[in-house]
Each structure stands twice: as C-alpha cells, then as structure tokens.
Image (cartoon, rainbow, N blue to C red; front, side, top):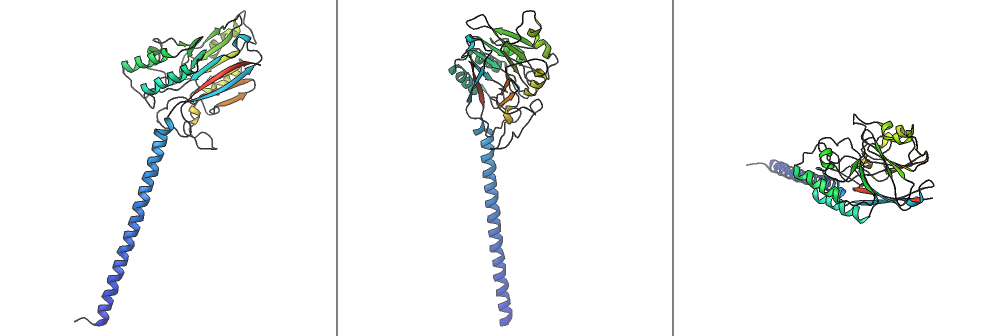
Length: 306
C-alpha cells in the first residue's frame, strides 16, 4: 500500500503533467492561429497583386500647351497605350476592353510605345489574329503609329502587318490637320534593336526645307533614352513606356521595380528643360503578372495652343 506522501507526490505529478499538456495545447493553438493568419495575409497580398491590381484600365488625362503648336492642332487628342505584354495578364477580354476605352476618347492620333507580346509567352495563330483585329478596331482621325519594345521579337512584325498601324522604326512622319503647317512625329524603337539609329529617326532636321521650331512629338520605348536624344535634337513632347511606373508601388515611396532603360525616368511625368516626358504605366505586366497601387492605364493627352 502506498504511503500518503507518495500518493500526494503522484497526484502533484499528474496535475503538473496535465498542466504541461494544457500549455502545449494552448501554444499549438496559438501557432496554428498565427499560421492561418499568415496564410490569409499571403492570400490577400497575392490576390491584390495578381487580380485586384490588374483590374480595369485607368485613363490618365493631361494637357500639353505650346506657343509653337500650329493653330490647326489646337485641341488635338492623342491616346498612348503601351506594354500590352499579351499572354501574361492581358488576354482577349482585356484587349477588347482596351479597344473600347480608346475609342470612347475619339482620338486624333493613337500611339503604341512597345512590348506587344511578352517574350516569355507563346501564342497561337488565332491569338495573333485576335490582336491584329483588335488593333484594327481602334479608331483615330489622323493616324495610328507604333514603335518596337524590347519584347517585340517573334510576333510583332507578323501581327502589325495585318493592322493599320504604321511602325516608325527610326522614322519620322509629318502630320497635317486642316492647315499647311504640320507637326513632326518621330519614332524610335527599343535600344535592344540592332538597327536603332537616333540620327536616322531625326533625319527631318537635316532636310533642306526643315523648320527648326516645328512642334515635335517623339515616341520611344525606353524613357532613359530621352537624355541622349535631347543632347542632339529637340522634342517638345516625348511619350515612352517600358517602366510600368514601377509596376509594384507603395504609398509615398519610389517605384519598387526599376528596369534597365528606366532607371532614371520611371514616374508618370517629367519636365526636362522644354520637353514634357510622359511615361505610361502600361496595360500588361512583364514576366511577373503582379501590380500594386498601380492599375493598368493609358495616357490621354490634349494639345493646346498657348
């Protein structure tokens, strides 16, 4: 028969063991709750980055004034879209939504500043036809123009030849509107293109009858190239893409993703001496289909005579 002291000792041990078990259960419950909270937080962040951040298309409207703009171009409307990266976050449904948004604005000129199909994507002939058809459905009174981006390799040429966009590959175009004084549109593709040539693109200023003060719009892919352009030539308005304005942003902080070609200039707007540089945040995503505090967008620019 056990003595009273031994019985008490065993009871105490049993109570201690039960207490330890209860503590372990509580700790395990806390750990499980923390893990569940973390899973929920990660899930919310993923949904925000992958889906909510890619919702809709914002129209960013701006006004550019100039004293050298011909009177006939007062009120000219330009729509710029860029960085579709078709095959990542952009598919047929979103592309058709883009067409609707562009046509609602009734632009005079539409410009596309590169990266039509993401280079990591493989698309079918049917999808190529869809892209071409959508681009043809965009309406502009004076013209539709495009330049190549660094992703525009495999599919760009075959798609664009079935549209009514004019690809400006180191080329310029004189645009007239209800008058005899034109404006100059210069197109410069990605710095990754072997054939890229800034001097060739601005050949207008070497022609015999050129006007030094002609209102000039330059469309280009990588915004950091603007410094090299302005070291030799003048442009009043420059429209670029490539940076996605950082793609992932946090309030009051700089862009979190900066890519080569958009290390210096990546925000939506810069004033560089007498040049207005607008960089569109783009419609699609590159490689990683994530956006945060930076919804897909297009630029809608009105020209005004000062």
